[in-house]
Amino acid sequence: MPTDSFQQKVLQIVKQIPPGKVTTYGHIAACLGNKRSARMVGWVLNSKKYNRDIPAHRVVNRKGLLTGKMHFEGSNLMQELLESEGINVVNNQVVDLEKHLWNPAETL
DNA sequence: TCTATGACTCCGG
DNA sequence: CCCGGAGCCATAG
Image (tube, rainbow, N blue to C red; front, side, top):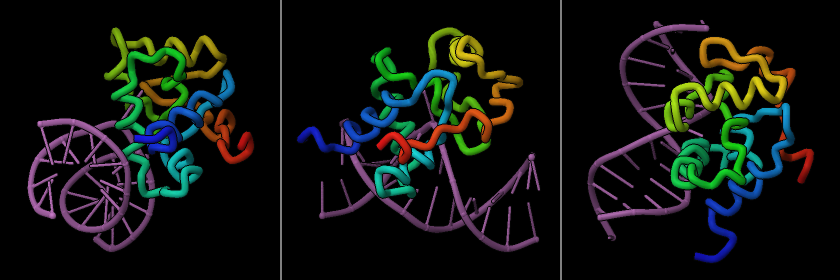
């Protein structure tokens, strides 16, 4: 499929997430125009999990919960990466999600 | 073409 | 906020 496939759009946005910031599947999906497709965002990352150019660890669900943690290598890699960027994570959940929340629409 | 799947989200209780 | 149920949509087989 052409470069404008859903996956390409998602990857395009996720790559632009700045360090120390996080966003939700819903926000990304909304930026794509289909805010109902939040599930697809995670599905794409799952398929591209071997591509380290994509900071998938900065993508969490609307609660700030690290839902994709289990899909990462090891058991706490995702949390380590977030903490390394200055984001505090407790019990697989981002603290002060709104504080670190990044709006994809701003960059675009 | 149809069915199954999923790193989600919304809604009502 | 937690729980159960329903909706949504792209991709794979």
